[in-house]
Length: 429
Image: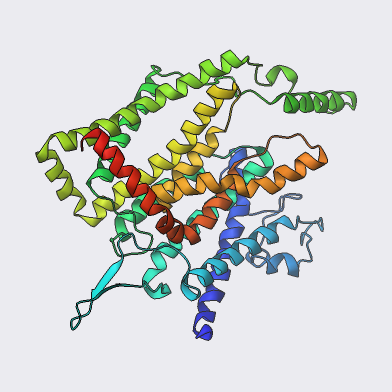
């Protein structure tokens, strides 16, 4: 049986390695605002354009013995490492999905009935590459996005907004095309979920319009405050560079200003103002649906179309994924008087939610700290004081949830259903 998968495993690695080669370009050029397509691949030392056979993922670097064919200068091993890791990730998820049958599960299980006894049983979903390649391709696209974002965040403490927003756009389009209630990984929603997504999206559009008009001001317009230890470290590096006579692109006057706790709380209040229209829009849309039977019937008719409920499910996932991180950032900042999380993490989980859904994105956010705890313990033991970028841990948690959300959802479902029943009773809906 395993031999029938070998050709697909080989193709998965080859395709993943090619994607990894592109990720090398993204990781280097995107944070520096350079074009991803022009100029074509070239040696970073002598700028000579590389031939296609020198660009073969992994093997091109090996055949060149890690040196440029033209200037003989060493080529960083990071390039083949990223290519190999990406290829291996594609293989790993192929094996988990289609051989070990560990992966996304259908939101509506298939039930079969015995004609003789009348007994009912759930029919297990068998993942096959021939039938379920679209969801595998979508998830691997997300893995590539997360890998690129993590590499950039680990090095520069930023997540370029283009990565999560492209992920969100691809997720919304893909779920519109492939979603059906019995397809693993589908995000089809019912009337309530659709109402929340619709109202929240309208509210988000309103917030963006108000922001563009200047009615909602940008928080921290001169840059978010640095941690004291980071500010002192940067100052020491600047002074050291000046003492050695090196040219500096940044000096102390260009660092973000120092904020008091009151200043920080005031700035974060602007972000809460941005969140109000989406929150009110979602609440109003649900309330209207339950107050007006004609609206509810219209919503039920709307979500009966798989492509519509797929789009709204992806939008719901994006909104919830971004909201959970953003409200944590706001509440944490208000509580402690220091910025709790970066806005890049908000955008990252917005893109994640559009692909894996609201529930999975929420669970991923809450288990992310466990992936960073070992690094935190190491820093504590070694006395290293440096802010940890959270993007890589959100990415690791998402990669984990892409495989194991199904049993986690089954475990949490009774409790969540109970909370939902209580909420409906209190709200009278």
